[in-house]
Image (cartoon, rainbow, N blue to C red; front, side, top):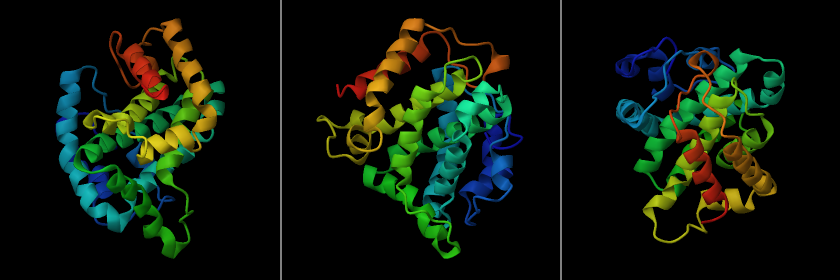
Length: 258
């Protein structure tokens, strides 16, 4: 990931990624973000490749954790993704693959970073990583005061229930479901249900609540359809076999509170 990066070994030296995790704050309106999410990196297709990618991302993510309180660049990346998804349904209808591709790439980067964040910090600390963007931009008047974590989760749920499952949207919908599962993975480290957790509260009582029934319906419908993974020419992320079905069922279980 990152502009012009095609190999996992290139990630640590990629100039765009180094800027993202570096010490300088990058405004949401900078051309940098378009460059950052316009990459042709081949996403992992199996657990072994995923582990190699995760190990390559860890040092970048740890550097971002250190610098993000001053730069707010992680929150800005979230906002860049959110801005790309506002017209995603229209883009699908117009077959705008470039727009969908960039939105997918932004979400893919977010998911990779979140996986490391969740391993390194508590829910409360993770929530702070989202709020640093507002602090970093208050002096320029760009901070909106919204809860970016809840905004992201609501957006992902909305994306899953509103965007049709087609060859050109398969990868971003798969990534949306996977990102939600990454957020819910805090539960894996707890014996009891995290009913008081920030993420649980957002999905069960926050802005996502009005869409939970449609989310369950959509996941069940997609499972029943048993759509095959489209050929590589029409999507970015390449899950193999039953992986897509398993992810949908896992999220369905979470949505029902089991």
